[in-house]
Length: 201
Length: 277
Image (tube, rainbow over all chains, first blue to last red; front, side, top):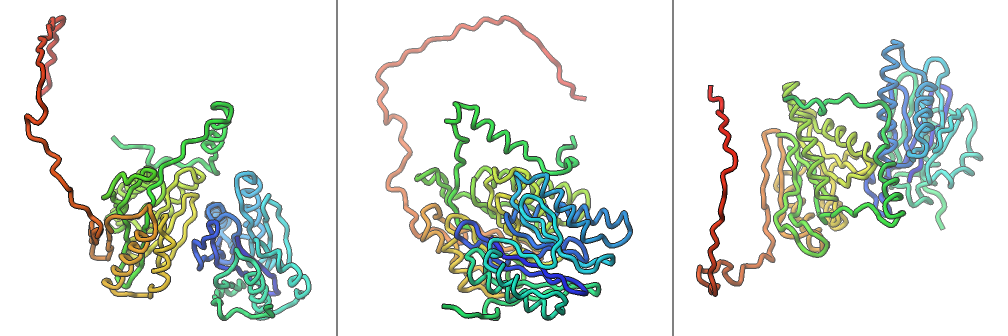
């Protein structure tokens, strides 16, 4: 299905995803963008059913935009995460959606919240999701350190995604990364042949 | 008479009533032995490509009913708006009706706002409709068009997922067509190159897939207008009729003739004058 990942650092968050959407064994889209903007400084990484996650993300973008206009200030990442949780929990039987919400707000800086299938909500400094995540828990646990800089986080995410895409059949294509800070948003794409390489048998 | 249901205020949240109803029906009818009827698929190859000045959409023209070709000149490229056309694969009735519904909605929008609709708007409306029905509407659509923001090509799946891509093939012949597109697609092609590419992609689908065949239709959409070429390329396997199928009067001999007059009785006469004012 996917590999998605998000990491907090001092001034913001780094998020990343692969770009493969499959229908059965056929790759329907090999350049998908799974990092969806919900608000100016809040993104969500989508895994699971494309239709379900697109619909939920659209609904939450609308609700968050409305809420932000009412408040007349940028919304909190925790608010966005709670909106996702409410929708994913209420419709947990009908939806297949594993979402990581990440962004920056003034109150708590960079935050990563994970809303896996079933509708749990928990804040974590680093979070991975999707079918490819199973292969990189070891790498994440052994290589994550708190207090990394933005460049270190970007490299950490790129390496983790490359490892997952190498081993998981449902993940692949290009690696899309984004860094969200107070100043703004930087998106990068790492093409297939430019991904970090590791030992391959 | 204004149809109020076109702009109905959507109920908040998701509505899964129809899918629960379908499951209940399957369980209730015949103690679970009756299954929902399988929808008829067309078997298709459709493709779309974004080129320098617009979008080229292509489709084959075969509609099958199991193993018999039901229609040799089926039109799979549907009109949505003056600047937007849609190719449909999957269940024939579903693609037809969904695109009709979309076209009507966008016409009302155009009349209300005085603008040509944008392709992203058509894609969003399709997403809303298809997601609401949880995949029960078997419509795989390639939406292509040119609007004030540029040339766009969208794929909308039957469950309500949407992808924005520069080139695309769908239907039962999509694997073959995709092979051609992956090999020869380039960004910002000229119109003739794009037409040849789409035509070759559909042709590959026709040659490889039993459910696709007959002619190839092309639809070229640019800022200036639409060129709907039907057919762009005719099938090289067209067969000419061996004999005439019209029979002269007198071919069948008449053996006996029996005329029985019907007796009618006038029971009641009523005259209603029409208002011609």
